[in-house]
Amino acid sequence: MTKQHKAVALISGGLDSMLAVRVLQEQGIEVEGINFFTGFCVEGHTHAIRNHDKDKQKRNNALWVAEQLGIKLHIVDVIEEYKDVLLNPKHGYGANMNPCLDCKIFMVGKAVEWVKKLHKDGFDFIVTGEVIGQRPMSQRKHTMPIISEESGADDILLRPLCAKNLPETKPEREGWVDREKLYDFHGRNRKPQIALAKQFGLHDFASPAGGCCFLTDKSYSDKLVDLWQARNSREYELDDIMLLKVGRHIRPTEEFKLIIARDAGESKFLEGYRKQYTSIHALSHSGPMALVDGELKQEQYPLAAAIVARFGQGRSADEVEIDIATPDQQRLQIKTAPLNAEEVLQEWYV
Amino acid sequence: MSRQELDARRLLCPMPVIKTQNQVAEMLPGDEIEVICTDPGALNDIPAWARINGHTVIETVQDEDEIRITVRVGA
Ligand code: SF4
Image (cartoon, rainbow over all chains, first blue to last red; front, side, top):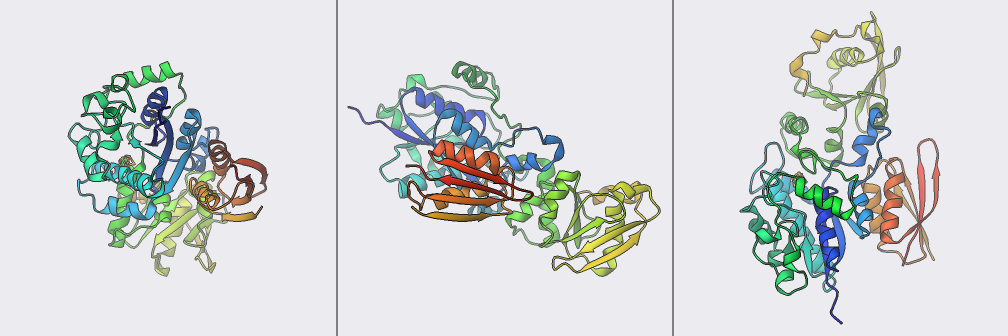
């Protein structure tokens, strides 16, 4: 009996990695999935926070994909290690703060480590859903060998969706998979993938527009850069990068920024941070929860209160009573007139 | 058979799943783990994770602000 070969696939939650796995399953390869959580991933919680997405399935796409494929999924927390990828990308950034090429090298490298260290004899090769020319930065003909090489995967990295456009890898050479039954997809045209999905009977898959994480998003990247500039340091914690996904961010002075909820869902979410951040909300009217990031000096209280008042039901009232609570729950109430729309300067919006 | 508890309060998905997964890796088939979390995303993610990896959710209790999900470790 021939040995059944086993592969670990990088699962992002999108269609491509899903197809890559299905193609190999067709060839009798046993596949398990691995998914990396960097903290920047576009996840169910980001949709769950806001009210208007309430009806949307709050699913984790990687788990969902694994379930559709009938494979095991290992989710790995790489938040700490990822910092170095984001802060010092050897190959630079894409259109925004996305270090896609370094990110790919890092993730494939982690998969190599995972296979070699933890599952010595268990897995024979690594699979990704990469397609040549699909993404401007990481998925190009000349970046494919860079990823294989710098990750340490070399010829045990197989990309079933574009393998025919690439040199033969070990699984093909050894006859574990039939190269003829792999694909030659290239470019940004998604039609071949959609057709293949149809052929496999896959539907309802997520198709992220820009990429698999928030770092490809301009507004998110702007907020991240603003945070680094304001702190004079590029260090960050998970809470910092989570909060960049939520609320309006308004920076009236260099010292502090207000994160103001846009709806009740976000207010509830921000409430969870009141023991870590100074929080501000209206008492006399209903209105959003706001957190202060940075240093809010006493003399700035009236300004911060007037801004928060602007975003609540009391925006046209003469006076709004605002509560300011520090993380150790020292509280202060201020009565203030809300700023009017023009007084909240456009350049304050991060 | 052991029964363990995991405090995943205030963690956002997928962190509760990752913590559960890592703790379960140290447990034996038949053991039980009660995960206490606050992110409603866990209501979907933990059962999905359990189904995929051969574990069973045996109880889910949801009150005002906490969710308790008990999982029996599979073989
Ligand atoms: S979009 Fe984000 S997660 Fe995806 S490769 Fe680029 S940096 Fe990495």
